[in-house]
Image 1 (cartoon, rainbow, N blue to C red):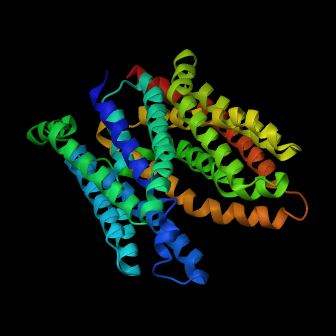
Image 2: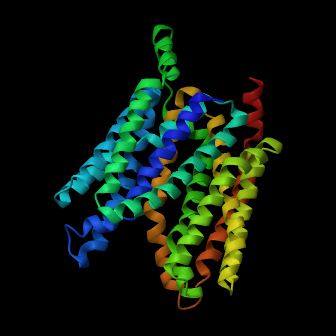
Image 3: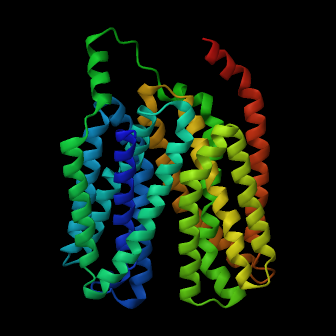
Length: 398
């Protein structure tokens, strides 16, 4: 097994588990410091604060990981997360919660560096498989984290934050002791040799600027179920919180399975382009079906299609990674994390407004809009691949 890739998967799962641990209990912790009428505002701001910091700082940390090595940036990220959760666990006032989230957002480079480690230590034809496993590891952590956090939160609203801090501290020690950064050795060798003039990053990403647009749009569309699932299922099918929770848990498990096993298999048998198109088609089909469903139980087989759509992003990430040289993988992965977090801020605002404005006409419009966006992306990716094929072939020949 690839020990570097396995390390990246483990750190990603622990990172997601730490995030998931605090989700069920953050409102309870906030109630200690704010009145009930201000609870929702502070809760939303705290969640958005991390994402906003990531939009600006993830590309910078990715760039530093190319320059200084993966290990030191990963250690900084884990230390920042441990500080965040420690402040939350020991908090005695509201400002400590904001300071912790601010520090974690600024230093949060775990996702970008883990993806860079995958790119450093896998062959291009294997990256869809490993990026899929990376997404699955994150999904497993998000499934396990809320379960553990919900149980621990019954004992104390501070306990899940203690557990999250310990997880990140343990990850810090593991990386410090066992992770040997081959990327740093490459940097040192380059410093002793003749270094070419650094290439401006805009020149580096110019060949994949259209793919970055597709990635951003795909992540944005993915915010539709994240934003409207509870409102849609409660409104159309009168589901209670248990039914909603079971459906989301089932979706999370199937997402992880598709990303871990199906994405790589399709990319190996066909190619990344086919995998991307199949993923978009599955997700778009699921959106259309969801818009038309009349019985709640029919959602469960539809979840298979919805989870199948998750194979597109690992293939898209692999396709971009293969077109960027090794010296700039951290920059690329940092940009992808930044774009993902940007959609996490924009998507809920956009689609909640769309859902609310169209609700009186029909509660399925938001799903139809998402399906139409997927059709546009499929046409776009086909035209990009057709226009870029000669360039890719020329680069291969060289």
